Length: 68
Length: 552
Image 1 (cartoon, rainbow over the protein chains, first blue to last red):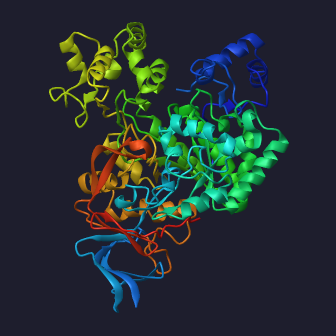
Image 2 (image 1 turned 60 degrees about the vertical axis):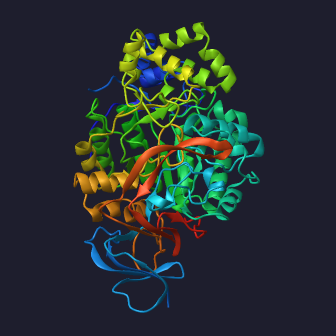
């Protein structure tokens, strides 16, 4: 059975920084723009967490905006 | 000669099939016969007008520490619960090195709101490994226990301080696999992990530092035993929850394991969320994955006073810091105008009208009689204050011993919740039994299932409701020989009045170590509870039976 498309995500690699993750997830975007987009789509990591931006190995990192 | 015969009841055997009048006979701890049973027994229990059902199974509890001084997990047993699953949400009391005990106690205190005295005053902490914990609780059990082992403590054992700093190396993952294998062999029913929890210092718990490769490797070990992976996902965000469902599904399919996540709440302010979660679960089950969403029966509410920290203030770090202080320092802070001004400011420009205005002053404490039952918003308006300031002032004026109730915080619409509970893929659970003890009662969800969803709204039949919390739970968790009134199965039996079974009003009691307070709800309409064939509760009183086992 096909799954209904849901918001796409990646999980961090060991030791990965947001720049590395953004370059991996959005390779066609300029790095600065890719980082900004990753930050804006993942407020649970980059706004709500203390310290903000601490990437954990278990994180779900969305690579697109909400679908609805 | 049977040991016990429960006679003349309405037998609801857990299968979901239609109830029938009959007897249930017990011998050597097992169901010996069901139907019209002739022959003598050493003891007979009259169940005329009552239901005879399998004992209920509670799959999400935190009774880990309570079991060390209370083998009945009171009051769970008197509600008809004969088997509990502790060790949820990545936290268990083994395997745990002595040096790491304070860390894990701090996590239990922060996440599950358990008082530190519970870990220091009531038992001799003599074990480190899982078998040692199993043996420590097994000596005194009146209830059956199927314990999970926590991912965070496994990480802590292998990685020490680094467990809360980084991902694991391949060698560390291999060591965690070996340790998990040892725990499963010693009786753990599965592994629990958490994607949301923080320790007492505000740091993510160790399990959150694990990458997917680590969880995959640990799931491979679960696959060797066919055991459960439980997780608490980011339940406040539906997109992340769906991502977790997909991750769990991949692990379930790859390693042929059952998985479960909890909680799933329904909230009328975000009415699409729970249906979206269930739709994804349906899709994943159609692929062959086993990813069981746990849903509680009871509405969400929180009670608190300023005598102790509360979940209610979780989003107000300054309030948490103030309330975590010893009493003298806390009073000093609450009497300091600068500190209080900042606390009030934290509520935003409305001074807490939205968050605190609807709080109801509870009775039963030192609350002034003229305030009991009224909202803080009304009282604050009369005093010319904002609610946050009024809350502090009223509390200070009465030794902080004024309790407030935040009612109807979600998951309260019976017409929405009922069909979800009846859904064939929804796992009724998530009681959190034994946790959050000073915020709300985590006991009596089974009584509420019958009173609200069977009797009052008719959303589930009696047989369906019993099946959901007995045979279905046993099947999901692989608890062989439990959950059904079938010859050869364990004689875990509850006798209850279908017309009155319920949970009583929530009330504070002071029966925790160090005279600590917790909220409980007594059982209504439960006549008798048998655990492995022994009468553990009868006529409103617990017996001396110690027939519970660690049962995987």
